[in-house]
Length: 314
Image (cartoon, rainbow, N blue to C red):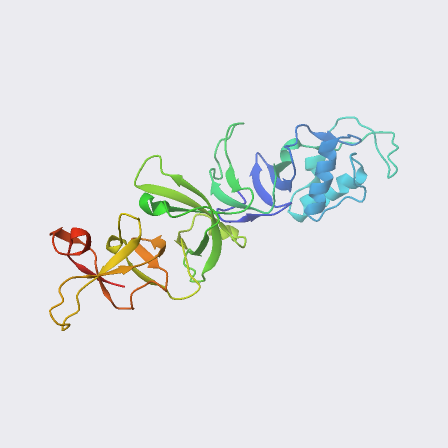
């Protein structure tokens, strides 16, 4: 095998040798379905020419016909990678084309369809190598697997937290041993079919990841909500509502203020709820550091018949 996991596959790259024949990568829309020889025409010929051009071996004559310039381009590709041009020879009789396309005589050119693996989008990252030198292969054998297109990240998250994650949210992440913080967006959120307590989020990076990132660990942070500046918040368990659905909090009695024992009711407007905390509209929030009632221990003398319990801070 000529490739390793994490490598970037480029047009014309040597991938493997199978029974003495090299295999190269070419971009294209479909696999080559026939061996080609001099004078053959068709979309597969056009794909071959465009792929050779992408690899830096453009024939002098492009288009949908195999010509001597196609043969010369292929011979350069083979010799540059240490292979004999005899791989393109056969005893089959075909037209011997000159540069104008007219021909008479014999040519031994045969371009084996197995000479190239066609990939839809190059460069592509190698994500797995399934075979090694000496393995016996058949038509169903897998030599390697590539990621065709943009590399994405897959991360696990608790299902209760996944409820706050939606597509297009901003993400920061690091990959492998690198400390550089990268950015991306959430492109999908799916429950884990094997574990109801976990979900999987898919992250699309803002900039393409290098092929060597394949298979490495990553750590991501999803921004579920943000503000333009500092905000005041209280535990969500501190927010109550009355019969009109107006929200309020109970301010804990302050020490040293006469005989005051009844909590003060303070109307608030909740802007957002984040991880068990209620973000309050600044104009309605209690002063920073104010203690609020976050639990109840039974009936008592508080507003609406509620007895203050534990305290929290805003």
